Length: 168
Image 1: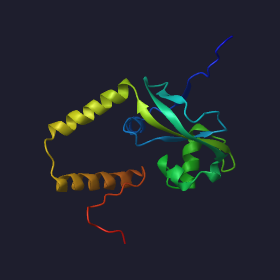
Image 2 (image 1 turned 90 degrees about the vertical axis):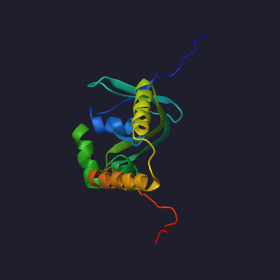
Image 3 (image 1 turned 60 degrees about the vertical axis):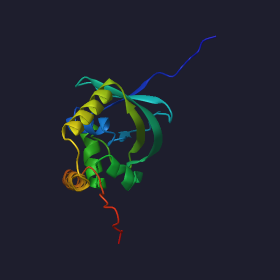
């Protein structure tokens, strides 16, 4: 009797240094791909780039099939697209015939891991330790600056709340 197991699945990632950073930092955890793809929740997936040698493992946590027009605002924003126009333009970079009626697969992952992730996290810890103790006020100012830069780059919304402040 043979024990047939499904093969490892991979998602090719564009050779974009910012995108790789966002994957390693677990900021980017979603992709939208043309067609209905057979990714399965709970399965491991290799995130990699064939043009720049790097790869990490992750676990698929959500798979949804729909048309491009049915991609939710939350999914678009999580993948770095603030509008349908920008989503369509971004998708056409890789899939020139894409339109709003095209079938797509939305794939979310979590638990990014591997040697590259371990090295990234070690660098973050080393940088934080080299800075010494940071006051709460300085940490909030830094977080606000990150949010400001994040808004300028269009990577999604980052909200900084100060303790004791209320939403209006």
